[in-house]
Image (cartoon, rainbow, N blue to C red):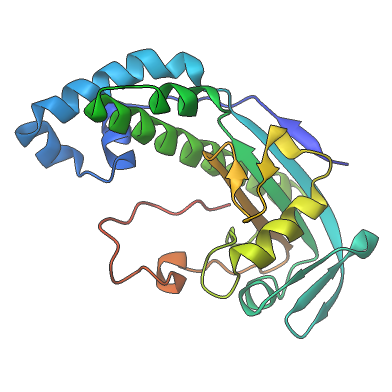
Length: 228
């Protein structure tokens, strides 16, 4: 049965917004007063527009096959990355989380480019915080059962293309998980949404997803990955 979680605490800061823009907060504070001012305004104006929600569906694993995880109910997850990192999973949690469309619409309508960037940074920071809290809660629930959670895996990471992973996650979270829809191209709407799966079982391994990412050599910054 799909669960909807809405009890999130988003205690975001100006530094979180700057990181969400892709900026290092320390030099930005010293050298970019316009960015700092816009981040402060975005925090004041945008906080009330955040509507965090997560759809979570936990499903039992029936069988592990070559590059396939067969799930209860006839569903499956496929791909080399999924098969490798869910190898020890007894259950799989599929998650789609979002902050809703309101902040996204506000940013798109903002004529000031610097404030628009700051509002987008707020949205990025907020959806990452929601995902972190979802993973922490899944980890606590697993621990209470004597189990562990593995590394959260999202479509688009190397070895699990968006066009493969997104439909598989959404097929586990029907109907209409958390008000998020998939476009024909596999993108989520609202855009400030995240989807991922987490393996649950005994002796689940944690992996450094930065090492798996195809952008690792070009990434301007690396923030802490969500973990269970």
